[in-house]
Image (cartoon, rainbow, N blue to C red; front, top):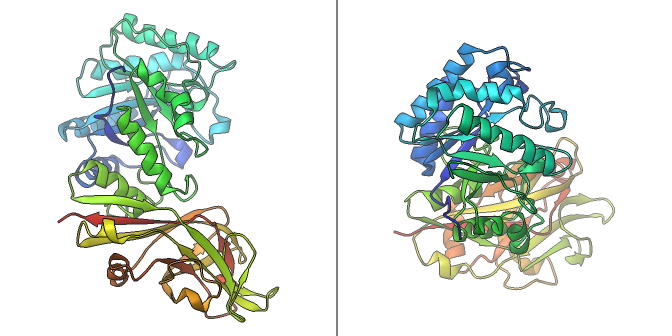
Length: 446
């Protein structure tokens, strides 16, 4: 196996990316520096990847250098270096939605961008050059190879750059399957892929990048979970992160601070996703365990019977003339929870449909049923211990089970969670959720 990148534990921000986010830059220098400090202190990161926009640096044709923008980039890079971070400077050309991007592969503006960046950062041991973000050449690989190899040659032979280079895969950096590879005269090139799809398993990961990592250095340059972009399976995410560790593949998590799915307002780890990363990277004494459901069932509470509709329903149903509620059962929690005496418990779920277009309020409770009951009364539910408001179709959510219920999970009293039924016929409580909500339990090993 090739020498890996597994020591890279980084976060990524588009804070310098520019006007696609509504202003000359998305964040102020101080905001970005605050993110970098939080990445190191709160998440255990040792690397920060900065998406820097080519067009803001040198204009649409590479001949309009903006010294003020370059100075802002340099200030942020210096701050990260002083923190002891490795800084990845990424050249991106995305100004708006990805489908509208006009510069899809390296061009003369890319050369101009790197000539200015290299004038300051060439040879710095803490600075990596991610040479072009998510190229999209057609036909696949041939245009990629021609343009990316020309850029490597320009960096090495014309600018005499000695930094580590990252080269993104073609097709939005999706896969290295059938990649022809690049030649780096310095032998210091890392291949980067982004956002593997949730349809993949170990065989798919092998095909997309694992096999390539057998003979090449590979890094996962972007990987994200937020309210919209989500595998909705912490179990699979954890298996994926363990796969990366096993193959010595590092990662820079994107976009770390987009919608508070990863970090809270104070940029502390939040939810299952932020804490999962912090627990893996930081020496904080916490371990994450994920539980997929063993069973789920929806019920009519009026006559205590099961309904055959798939997924997990809650709220008033005119069609059934009843309130609906659902229960989800998991395996045993007691073994892993016996490893410590402090816990954080999360439920991750997808809203399939909200009857109120403004969003449904998910009513989450707990139950004591060992196996799937035939009746709602057999669930023995304690309903509505925590709520998640404004859940809309197709989005992903997480709630924290209140601490007063943790002991019941640890001693085996609680076996799972419930949705609903709801205390009123109001449409705001009417909706249904996916059939695969997962429970995530963090245990602090004291």
